[in-house]
Length: 238
Length: 147
Length: 58
Image 1 (cartoon, each protein chain N blue to C red):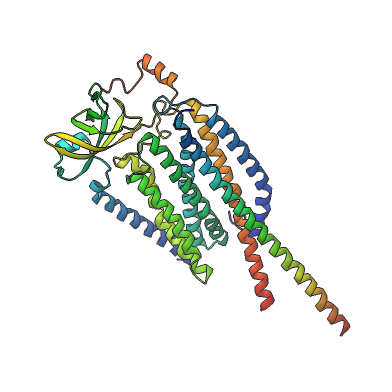
Image 2: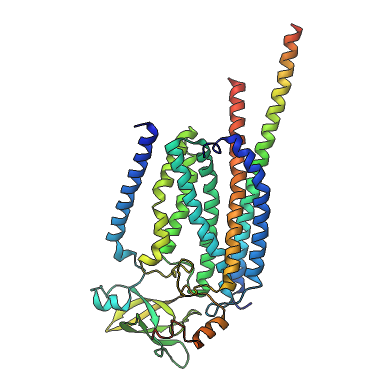
């Protein structure tokens, strides 16, 4: 693990991985979109509107997955002082915020025709909104100090505290009465999702994961370059 | 202890106590966190019925009656143990059907729930119509033996 | 497609706009940083050559 935590090693591996992840992200998303929009059946209850699921559900998975990664990176920065972990957490925050925004927007667009409302303050929807503000809070805090080290520490602390929200989001639909329905995929009995609808769902999920890796690599390399520029300028003025 | 070990224990313990604290807080606030009450909650718990509340459950099969102009709707909300009759005046969401989930907001007076808004609640099952039909035919449909 | 077509297209459209913007912005920031670094390296080299010339002449 420590071998990969070296910036030079990271840049080497990342530049080799990036073409693969980005091209596979495009392929998976295009196939997912094709199956999702054109080649999957309408739902027996919801009709065509079920197609919103193929972006809403993978985006919701991403918003939780990215937050977990960010919290893990923050913990490893606070405990082992890995600067690369700090760079990863800083890069993950805006990506997670974007996926959470997608979850909220597509959720509203799904709720209006199906439930009859854009938004309700039930436990699931409210906890996802809290997640969005945790991402925004992290992004604000990480740049709030003159000393970047201080900002990283404060934001990492926030990321760890906010991690409590992740199980709350996951289990909110089981613990409390909510308007939002419970999870379909974690059930092991009876077919909760038909296989013809599962295909576009999983393809989109895979496409989003690969897109995450690609954007993460680009963002982390940008920060590494910016750090080198800063170091060179310091050397010059000093 | 090395500084790294100290930081590791500190963060683990801190997170653990945070988890316990939030679990306690969530249990304490449980009643305000539920979005709606089930008919059993209304019958068994003492819930202040003067206030505006939400009730949720299934639209009992065979209970749906519409007035001739289709504006006034009567139905029963059930959780398969208890049911509460409800009346509503206005447009209904598309998914509002018998045996489907419903959340109604309004107030209870003399045992009848006067709904101001109706939200449809859908379940976690997704399948094409043909699959649903064949499941029903094969008698493997869960919704069928619920009523 | 049924009467809810516009909801479906808005959902897909919003997703595409957000993700493409995120990707484009990240690439844009990367290009700028890379260009800045290249310029800095070039300047340093030129300056280095100048100072070494001065040292030779003296």
